[in-house]
Length: 393
Image (cartoon, rainbow, N blue to C red):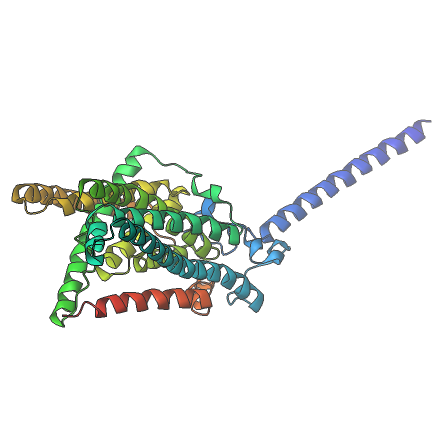
């Protein structure tokens, strides 16, 4: 009996030891599998990117979930096609939005002009055109057109790309102090880029061309000014951020956040259809994309955009009042200096994402083979060129 109990105790001890060894082996195996497993939110192992802004890379490569998988330096054909699909969605959305907004504006102008001619049978066509331009009608058409086009194509493109729009308001660590810092930094970028745009304009003027294509004779009545101000200071910032920093940047950032920031800013500049606005729009677009990625939300860029557009509107309405122009210029100079400091501090604490060598093969390298991107860029540049050519003196 004692001998049997001894065997039982020895057997129990051996079983416990085997159990412990199995547990240790399972833990080591688990740790090994975790160490070789691809982080689907960071398959390129890029510490400069914003993790919360990333998407699951298995949407691009389903087998990225396999053990010991690593993203190759050069993307294979299947991966290129998956990335190109998103780039084409972004490009074709830009293209369709461009034509749709133009057609919608043309239809509205035609219908309203037709109604005015019918109800004012003795009025000349030129008089109707003058009335629509200087009153609130053209300003209202502009507001309606871009409200419909920007908001509509934001949600259509996100649905096409199978991206939930809710990501745009999942704000992280955004405070009043951030809004103040970003405002001053944006003023520095805007004011500096306006000087650059002025230099470009001077170069064009030497060769008999003008890049100033904005209609300065529009919305001169009280109601027209109110509609234009609402559009410039509220509707445009909100809808443009929805479209460019909301949809376009997200769609183009599937494999490379830096590329997503720069190409969405580039399209943002092109969408203004003139060089004076392209320069500040592009440079501001980079900054706005950066802060939105940092906070995983379009709210920071909307706030900054509203402030900058309001400043620009106030500046444009000062007219020939030398005192007000001088006071506003002094205010801008102070903001410019403070903004330079704020921008330096911001960039020291939060740098733009840097592409890894593998990611660089998935940005421009694939975009330049995407038909949607090529057509969108070509059409926008061609349109801008035609406008400048038609302004030759």
